[in-house]
Every structure is written in structure tokens, then in C-alpha cells.
Image 1: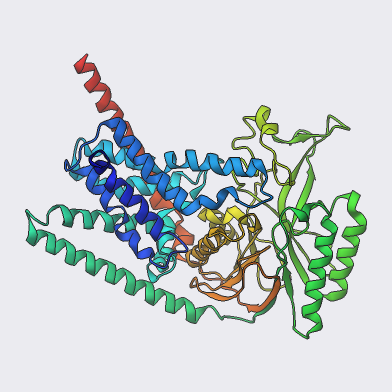
Image 2 (image 1 turned 30 degrees about the horizontal axis):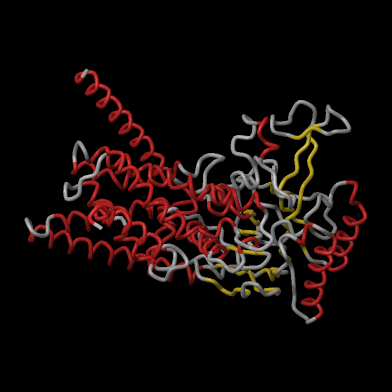
Amino acid sequence: MGSMRPFAPYLLTGFLLVAAFSPSPVGVLSLIAYVPLLLVLTTDAVTLSTAKRRWALYITFAVFHIGTNWWISSWQERTDPYLFASGLALCVFHPFFLMAPWAVVGAIARRSRRFALVLAPIVVTAFEWAHGQTDASYPWLTTGYMVVGNDLAQLAEWVGVYGLTFMILCVNVAVSVAWMGWRRYPRRSRVVATSITLFVGIWWTLGYTLREGASLAFRKGGGTSVALVQPDEDPWEKWSDPRIQVRRHISMVDSVRASGKRVDLVVWSETAIPFPIRDARYSPEWESLRTWIDTSGISLLTGYSDFYVYPTGTAPPSARTSTLDLTTRFDAFNAAMLIEPGRSDIPVHRKTMLTPVAERLPFADQLTFAMSWFEWGVGISSWGKGAVREPLPSRHPPQIGVIICIESIYPEVALDLVRNGANVLCVITNDAWYNGTPGPRQHYDIARMRAIEQRKTLLRCANSGVTGVILPNGASAAEIPALEPGVLTLPVYTNEERTVFSRIGNLPAQIFAVCTAGILLTLIVLRTRERRRSS
């Protein structure tokens, strides 16, 4: 047992992070979750060799990742082996990304405990932002999401989720300082503790005020009646006969219309039409869908598989080559389109951030030779990557910024859509691979953060749940229970006002990233000089 004692603070932080993360009702634990780790990295109470310290950090964030994201391998009877294996690989490698900023904090602490404490919020925030900037990114476990269930999250309209990370880390640092000085400097520690209480109290009060303000402001203008369809389809079966899925969706909408409810806009989930219906091969199906829309008078926003042939000379290196004509380059996209009565042009959003490995090989344009190694059997791998983030123009007041599945964990996607004119956000997803796990609820809570950051109504349409309407204050106006088919019909209101975050974006986190790069460079230079002196 004695040999495990040095690892106890690391494990405690890991378990506290798990306890604080969605769908936990005690996200406030995030305000102290990093304290054990900060104490052990910045004091001499427990000493570990460099190698053991690295392993301890890895174990910390392996506990965090596995405790919150264990469901990512699907764990269902029909789970594709490739999906299962990729989830296990994520469990092995993702902790290295999560531990990286803390390895830097530890390196700083070996030179100056005080500097380590001051710089920890900057370094961690910088790494969390950087973690979401590449094809290989997976910023699902961003610290700021831990407070989405309480009023502390409301300041995201000013600072975004990464700003919340910074504020949470500042509180953790202050608690650590108070703890370290409690015996030697009790008066000073009491002052720090009082300051922490005041800071969190003011933060919470501001959050409450902002939430109430957003609650009063969101019903501006006339409401558009929107119907969100949750079919609860088997995620594996839907690819076997995709036409059945379309007919079922239409039937569910017709049932609502037959009940006398007014419907202006219908939303179907990600890949609700799981084939390239606009391709010439499927012209009968396309004409049938258009006829239904024209005769019913409703607009349809739906996920579908989009087939695009590139003009000569414009295809990216990762584009596929036709087996019939080697000069033809094309891609299939995970996409969404808006179809309106009597309108010939079809605005399309192609997914710009894809699930690493599962949907697309990271850096596929540079690693084209390896693309065929990463494909699985239900038609959703090796998607093309969209390049444009613009709202889909509509005849209705909502100018909808569409966010497809994992795009919702990237603040930049919603940010770009709002900056380009979106006054309502819409997340379409198929989380049915993870039925019966915390995954769909975590995903829903992350969408709540996007609504708060932009102060926009957010429609969320999922295959099996969670489908709901999220208000600009992050609260759910209504939800369809998970694993139940249903149609949710509600009036949706637009909001043209811009938040502070929508104007400045992640500029503070980017500044922190530049500072962190300077810190890393300084550490490297100092380490190089020391080695030269010792040799």
C-alpha cells in the first residue's frame, strides 16, 4: 500500500473529474478537482521520479477519459469490430493529449512553484484550445463543459467554453494556495479562502443574472412552427434498405399534420436519408420527396449522403477516383440540405469536422495511401470534408446554422455560422451507436453550451435521442425521451443579437497559446543550457 501512496493525489483528481463531468449533477466539483494534482506537482510533499510522474499523469487522465467516455466503443451486440477497436484505441491514446499541459506545469514547477501556479490556468486553457484545432482532435472532455448544468456556465456568452476552463483553473489554483499556506500562514490563507468565496459568489450571481436576461429576451418576433422527428431506428439496419427510412419519416410527419398541428419546418436527423438521393441514380426517390414537400407546403431540413463530382483539377488529394473513368474524382459527404416548396436551388451544408478515424482518417490529404485501412461496414467511413460554414437560407425567419453530430463539440463551428448570419442553430445527429450509455446526454449538454455561447435557440434532432429544443439560456424547452419514436413540435424564435463571445471568439485562448509556446521554448532553451554545462 505504501508504494501506491504517491499516486493517490493523481487518482483523486481523476475520480473528481469523472464525478464533475456531464451528466453529473455536481459539476461544481470541477472547482476543486485539479487541487490534488496541483498540490502534488508544486510541492515536495510527495516525490516521484520523472518517469513515475509521467505515468501518474497518464493514469490520472486515463481514469478521467475511461470514466466519462467508456461508451465510445459502442458496447452493443452488433457493434462493428472496427468501431469497437477505434474506441479502445482512443482510450489508450487520448490521455496523452489530456496530460500534456500538466506535464508542462510540472516542468515549470521544478524551477518555480509560484510560476507554475500562476501559469497553470494559461497553459491548460491553451492546450485545450489547441486540442480542438486539427483533424485528429477530440475536445469532448473540455473542462468548461463540467459547469453546463449550473449558472456558472452562463458567462460563456462572454468568454466561451475555453474561458470557463480558465476561470475554473483559477479557482483550483486559489484553493491550492489556500491549502498550502493553511498551517504556516493561516491569516493569509483565510484571506485567500474569503476571496475565493467572493469570486465564485459573484460569478454565480452574474450567471444567474445573464440566464434570467436570456430567458426574457428569446421570444422576439413571430415563432416558426418546427417539427423535430426522432424515429429511433436501428443504426445498423437503416443502411440495409434506406428507402424504408425515408417513408417512415414521411409517415411520422403526416401523422402530426393529420392531427391539425401547424408545421412550417420539419427537421430529420443525421443521415436520415442514408443514400445520395440527389444523384441521378435515385431520381424517382428524389422526385417523390420533392412532390411530398411541394404538396404539403412544408420545408424540410434533413441529413443525407451527398455525392459530389469535382470539376477537373479541383479535387483534393483524398478524393476518390471513379473505377469507370479514372479522370473523374468525387467524394461522398455527410451532409444536410434544406428543401422548400417550389424552390429549385438546394442549399447544402457538408460536415466540416469529422470523427477522427471513424468517419475519416486524420490528415487524409497527406496520408492518402492509408485511407483504405480505416473503413468500416455501415457506410459512414471515409467521408469527404466540407470547407464552408454558412447558414442555410430559408423563406422562414430562421436562418439555420446546421451542425452535424461531432461538429457540436467545436465552438468554432457554431461561431462561424453565427458570424455568417445564422439566427438559429440546429444539431442533427445519430447517437444510436451509444444507446443506453451517458454518451447521448453528454452530447446534448455540449449542445447546451453552444446555445449559451451564442444566445441562440438550438434545435437538436437525433435518431434515438436526445431530441429537444434548447433555449438561448441553455435550458431545454422540451425533449423527446430517449429510445422512443416521436415528433416534437414547438414554435421557434430567432435572435439577431450578437454575444461578446461571438465577436471576440477564442482570441484569449489563442493569446494563451502563444504565451504557452513561449514558455515551452524557454523551458527547452534552459534545459539545453543545463545539459551543456553538465557535459
